[in-house]
Image (cartoon, rainbow over all chains, first blue to last red; front, top):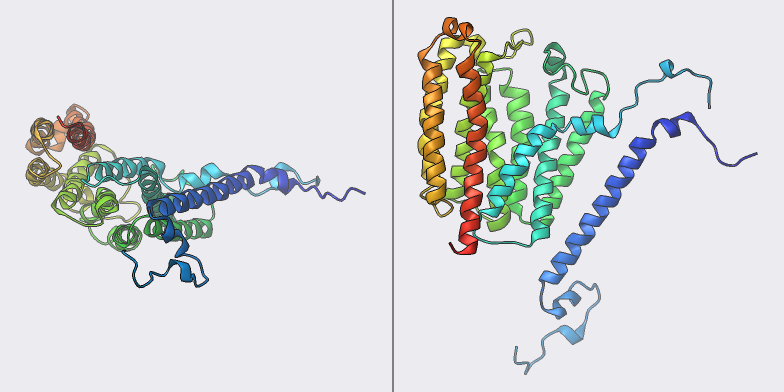
Length: 67
Length: 307
């Protein structure tokens, strides 16, 4: 017996399912592209690391730093 | 496959039916005016952020259209023009329209906030609220001034576009808002005069029904007169210029002349030539809005190229 179950509703809703799938993939693409743009707009590479969730002593300004 | 015949199946709504809920034709106007508001702003942003912002504004407008169709399904079913809409024709269930409207409203507002700023997202949220609640649920069935106040919802997009680019509201964006706001009543009432509507059957108070057609004619000229200084005023702000002023002068003269014609005649004269003047003014009103915003784009392009 075939494991795949076919039902007429699969055929009937095919267009709608593909449409929803395309919308979701498109949405993921938009959020990803937005993330890329936002991160690149930060400019200074060290700011990327500010989003890390772990304390990073290396990026904390030290005494004597010129900045 | 089962043996059930096709006739036994309930109609399955496709993507096109859901898309129709979003009033694509209204959406195209929203996209155009929001894009102009964004492009004429003095601070150029990242093109992708701009694209995403316009998409969010368009989807937000579509969401409010879906909420409007959900609430107004009873009215739509009674009028010929709207009886074929997805809900009254039975292709989409009311609950689906409500769900789509709410979900897309949330997505568009939050994404616009993340992509741009809180002001733009707040303005978009207010626009959706204004159209779906203040206009559709409250004013549309309560007052013949529904068109005037409802027009505000259609006037917000350029202001949102401007807020996306600048993060603020200024005289330029307020005047772009005012241009669409003051343009909507004469545009719509010119249409109402020559289209035999069945708003009466649906108990929607339209000015032509509640105050009569002569009163509607007076309203058309009054709003056209009030519209002209707003339209010309934009020409003296930072987004205006000689090209815009030239277009505005010609279009306002043309529009005023047409509206004067509507005011000077009565229905007997209009019946005689099958509402020729009213039809013409309606058509001119479409050019009017398109050319005003188009001229603003030209001015922006001239500024960018340094002419």
